[in-house]
Image 1 (cartoon, rainbow, N blue to C red):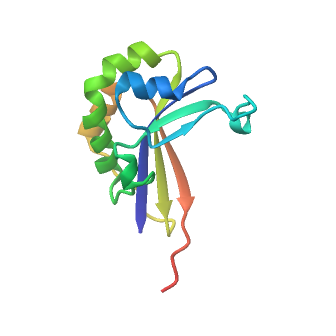
Image 2 (image 1 turned 60 degrees about the vertical axis):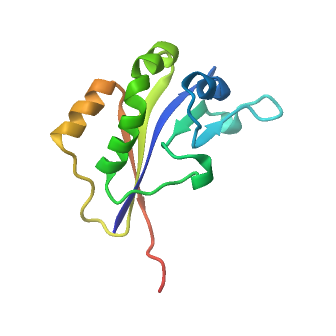
Length: 137
């Protein structure tokens, strides 16, 4: 069985996640801010991530199809593409995809239509694979 999570992420050392939220009018699925000591958490980049869901629906949304998850986000973000590129083009931006698998066979498939839309948006795709131990029955 394969499950997927998908987020559009913007990160950088000088990123202010609350400004991303305000400028785009989108609620993030997660943020990484400065902690109270004004040091970065784990000395990593600041992050704003969006999965297309309202926070009341939970921070993690799983998909049976990676393509379906990516298309879901593309529909929501394509109208904001120019604004995203203009305001945040100097930061690292990418599609983050988690692939959770219980076996070592299979995986996602992608249509030419999806590749075209991802190329048009102009940011890289990062696929992170995880082996998920099946839950005992």
